[in-house]
Image (cartoon, rainbow, N blue to C red; front, side, top):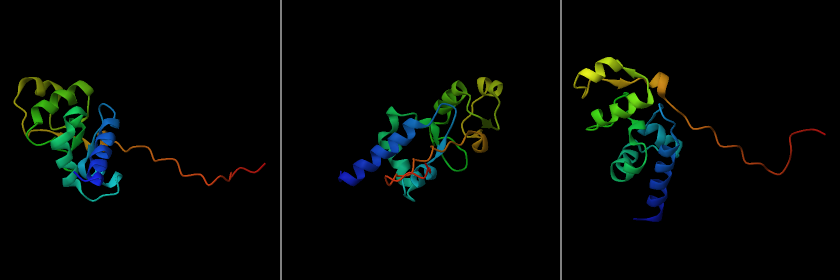
Length: 127
């Protein structure tokens, strides 16, 4: 794998590892955070290398959980109290849920704090 590709994989996994419990980011949001427009590439990184990070915290822009992992992801969402739409905790404990819920992006979306601006060695504070 080319070095650039390896660094992108590492960057994606680092962003995902920083997402706090109960919060989520979309594939596109992670790509944008890394200066890319490649939401699908982020998805590929997660599919190939994401098993050691909290993969369930990376969702589709529609609020849907990772495809083919809806039930496993729901266990994590309930444990972390991630805000959901279309499903209460009580309903989740009694029904098959595949495709029947979404994450409430307005409440659960997380953005990393901005990086501090580079300092030029000059202070803006008057003495």
